[in-house]
Image 1 (tube, rainbow over the protein chains, first blue to last red):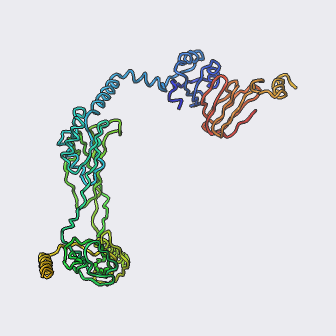
Image 2 (cartoon, each protein chain N blue to C red):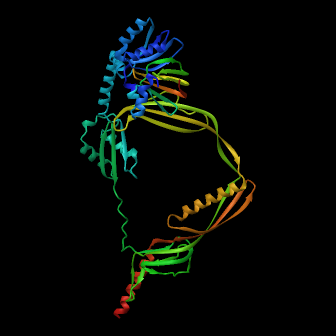
Image 3 (cartoon, chains in turn purple, yellow):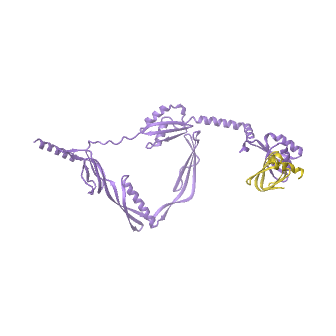
Length: 409
Length: 89
C-alpha cells in the first residue's frame, strides 16, 4: 500500500557486478526497492524520486548503462496529470455539469402507496410541472404538495424530499370509512349454501334454526322480523354468525400431456438510451421476430444514490426464444396436478373464513388423460344478508295494525 | 580464543544484545516468505534462486524460488519470495 504513495523511479541498470552496484548504493545511503536480476549483468530496481541524479552519477562513474523506465507513485502521477490541461478542463466541466444537473429532477421515487398506482403519482407530478427534467429550485414544495393532494384524492398526506436529482415522494393513503350498518333497515340473514349448522349466534333478530339443523340454500337463518313481548312484530337489521358444515364436490379434467417451453438457445438484445425524456433506440425494428420469447428488461440509471443522478438511463431488453413442446406426464404427476388445481379452486371458493376439514379424491382414467373428483367437507360461515321483501313488510304492518285494533276492542 | 571472537564472547558473557554490542547480523525469518537481515555488510551474490549476504563474521546464504530484494538500505536488507533454506557459512 505504501508503494502507491511513495514517489520513485524504476530503473534498469547494466553492470558487470550487479551486487557490487547495490552494495555501493546502500553504502551511500541510497535506499532502493524491488531489485530483481534480469540476467547476469542486468537488474531492475526502484530508487526514491529525489535520488535519481545521484544514482546517475554513481552509474556513470562505474561505467554502467542506465535506463530510466518510468516514474511510479503518487507525486509523478499528479505531475503527469497536471501537464494534461485538456483533461483538467474536461474534469472541471464535468464537475460543473454534474453540479448543475443535480438541480434538475431526473428520477421520481414513490413510496408508501398501496392502492394509488405509482403511475398516477408520476402523472400528478408531471401535471404539476415537476416532471422529469424540471428545475427543482423553481418549485415551492408546499404548493406542489397541495397540488398533488388535490390531484390524488385518495392521498391523505404527501412528503417530498429532494436529493441529488431524485425526488422521493412519500404517501400516506386515506383510510376507507368503514361500512355503516343501518340498524333501521330490515334485513334477514339467509343461508348462502346448504349445510349442517354447528353454531349460531344471533346478536340482533330472531334465530330460526338450531344447532344440528340441516339448512338449504336461501333458507332463513336469523329473521329481521322480531316478535316483541306485547305481541307486535318489529323489523330489525338481523346480525349474527352462523357456522355450518358444508360439502363440496368438484371435478377436473387432467390431460395426459402438458405444453412446456423448450429454449432454442437463440437470444437477442435491444439497447436503448433514455436521455431525459428522449429515447434513443440502438435497433432498427421494435417488433420481435419469432413466435414466443421471454423478455428480461434491465434498467440502469446512471447515478450514485444520494450523491448525483444523471439524466441518462440505459435500458437493455433481452429476448430468450423458446418453442412450445408437448410433454407426456406420468399418472402420478397428472393426479398431483389435478389434486392441486382442485384444492386451489376449493380454497378460492371458501374464501378466508372457511376451513377444509376432510378431503378425498376419486380418479377415473380417460383416453386422453383422467378425470379427478374431489369430495370435501368444510366448516364455514354460511349466513348472508337479504333485505325483507315488500310483501313481508306489508304483512308485518297489517299484522301489527290488526293486533292494535284487537287490543283497542 | 581468537581476538575477533572477543566482542561476541563478551556480549554472550555479559548477556548483552550481540547485534548491538558486537555488530553481529540479526536475521529475522517471517514464515517462508520474508527474511530481513540487519547489520549486514553488503551483498556477495544475487540471483532469483540464491542470495548471499555478508554478515561480517558470518555469511548468510538464502536459497529459494523467485527471491526478490524488496528493499536494501545501508544496514538492512529485506528479501521476499519462497525461501527454502537459510544457511550460515
